[in-house]
Image (cartoon, rainbow, N blue to C red):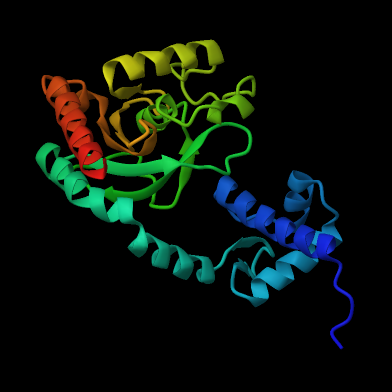
Length: 260
């Protein structure tokens, strides 16, 4: 009665739809059918039919003025549901809030993006706002390069064995003159982080912005999340720098022991 279903084709269709959603998340902007088609190497007619299906279910929405597509409100609903149920986020949040209040800077809780394509990325699952003004405050749910951030490097330094293998050799985007774009230098940096127990982003993503981060480790010694404190370089790299480092290390070790 229902006809013959080609299982392979059905899986490909779902895979294609997910690729579109992940592409929109990765680019962080509205995209047209031609842009999506070129990025994924899929016929425009196929992209169109997939977008119509996703739009019908509320997973994407079309801008009536320019015809481009963006993530839909259904994803927001799902994301908020997951956000409220994330055990690690609920456990870490009170500590992150205490750090933000103590140093008057923004604190992020991040995890590795297991679906990153070209180079390692991390996803911000929670943040505690600062009373101070910060030039760059990525929103919850956003994905960012690991090699340009303290929290990303902390996650990479304690990542699962073999995680980096699929990325090594791929181009690392450059954002400032201080961005690490050499894999050799990045791997050296990760080794240093493992020795010291914390990571620093010294204006590697944005000039004038400095971050300090440390990993939250599971029983196996691998990072399950990381905490970072971000602020203007003049404030972070001041007389309180060592205090920030010590505080974030103490708190992440304390959380790791609770998890253990």
